[in-house]
Every structure is written in structure tokens, then in C-alpha cells.
Image (spheres, helix red, strand yellow):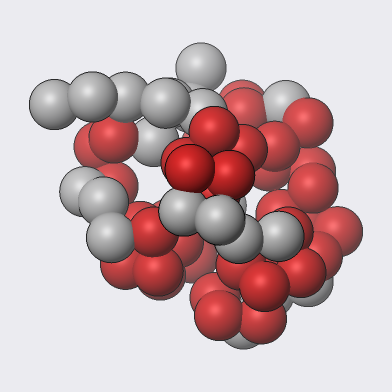
Length: 66
């Protein structure tokens, strides 16, 4: 199972931060914070992580969070 940072997954799917944020129903700033420091994703709600993974069509474990 391939693991990548959120920014890499987002770009590989051709999405902007704004598009991903709208699809996940969180702010663009939150997406930017998750991408700036992947450790921030550790503090995301489980629901947000699941929605991000669903939008990106990946398994949540494929998000690199360290």
C-alpha cells in the first residue's frame, strides 16, 4: 500500500486545496495546515480523515501523517 503526504495525493488527483476543502466540508486553511505539517493531520477528527480519504479515493492508512 503506497503512502504519500496529503499534498502529494491531492495534486495527483488534480485537485486544488480549495476543491478538496469544499469536498471534505472544511476550510482551505485547514487543508493548508495539514499539508504544511503532516503531523497536524494526527490531530484531525477521524471523520475528516475518512472524508479526505474518500474524496481522494484512497485508504486512510495511505495518508502519511508523520
